[in-house]
Length: 231
Image (cartoon, rainbow, N blue to C red; front, side, top):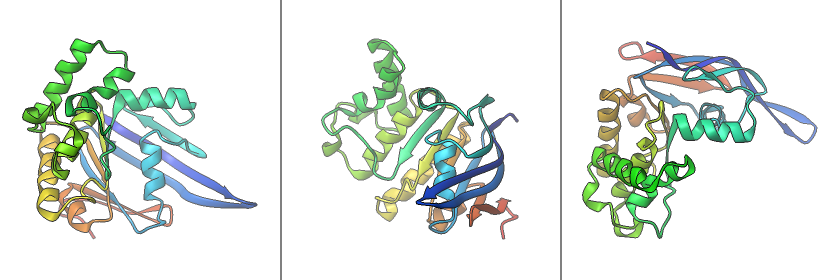
């Protein structure tokens, strides 16, 4: 299978006054198309930094990163923004929906940035909402939806541009247990349909549902285990 994520010796350092703080210290990671991976680790371990690099929200200090075959390690902000819009669908804990826009308009937003025409945007948004079983709420605003429905809208928005990767940051963090379980089942169904899914989470139960767990500790990969081989 082709690699969606191909990271080699990735390092990220931050300056705090005169001090250099290493957040990632030579991480190498390959994630193939169609995998379902959880990135876990304690606070301050570097997993958020790794997520930002995977999501093209930041660039590394050193090392190489190829996303879906494209070298993105040292792209400038405009080029990173273009890559994000084309190749990555984001799902966040706080949904990040426009409060006055309908579900359909929220889902279509990435296609506005991509310059897609209005008719094609609407059709794609409807297909994405159907995929998350929310087509009957497409004309509702976020305040007319439950938390689980809002997260489904966010997932539909992440899928609308047919990305190479679905990247979710604590996607059940603002949901009750029952609703969170429904969202987890949706991620599993999307993965079964062939979507590459990466979850960044503190929740061990959520992580265990993934097929592979990558644990980050002190800026390094401490373990990388698939089903049946986890420490």
